[in-house]
Amino acid sequence: MTSLAGRNAVVFGVANKRSIAWSIAQGLHAAGARLAITYQNERLEEEAKDLILSLPGAEAFRCDVSQDQELDRLFSELRARYGKLHVLVHSIAYAPAEELKGEFLSTTREGFRIAHDVSVYSLIALARAAAPLMEDGGSIITMTYYGAEKVVPRSNVMGVAKAALEATVRYLAADLGKRRIRINAISAGPIKTLAARGISGLGDMLKAHAERAPLQRNVDVNEVGSTGVFLASDASSGITGETIYVDCGYNIMGF
Image (cartoon, rainbow, N blue to C red):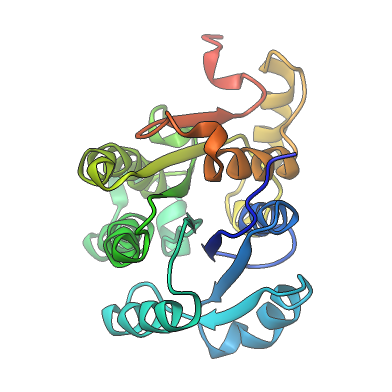
């Protein structure tokens, strides 16, 4: 089994026990990593803390990634508490609900800005803040999906934001490589997470993926979690700037 003993990891984006970030957090914990897990605001504090503290040794921290002062505060706390960081998981995406209805043509300027600020710029801000703490090198992992490269109905501005996120991974990889920091994206197939349920037609998407994917089924959230652990570990030490598909092979199919 992969060992991450002696390594410190911070995970952003745990919403509930069905979230991909939670599956990765559980995998990192099982591999021996010391975990810091963030929640967004006071409204989510009670549910998040109950979940986070169910992992022995994990600690909860509040952070709204859209606020620079909160990032500064958080990373000061992380430095004081852990000294160094080795792994960062970015599993954050948001667009206003109305932007995921109707035509992409109707995307508003503000909806576009919010989607890219929260879903894309946050990765740049987190990488910049984490890099000084990754003195021994490290691994940054973010989450994307197939809507980044092909049109997925009703993904709209979120698909475009994920395309920007994947490009951001490549540019950050070029900058961070000299510090021995790797960064990769996991492109997961559709999963019944709370976030995915906000997209109408999820049932149809799951059915189509299971029918067309070479493995003839949908991916399990734990398979995505295991890939996160792999990317956090030395087993992936030669991999950076990549998008790793965990979708039962769906993306390779032309029809």
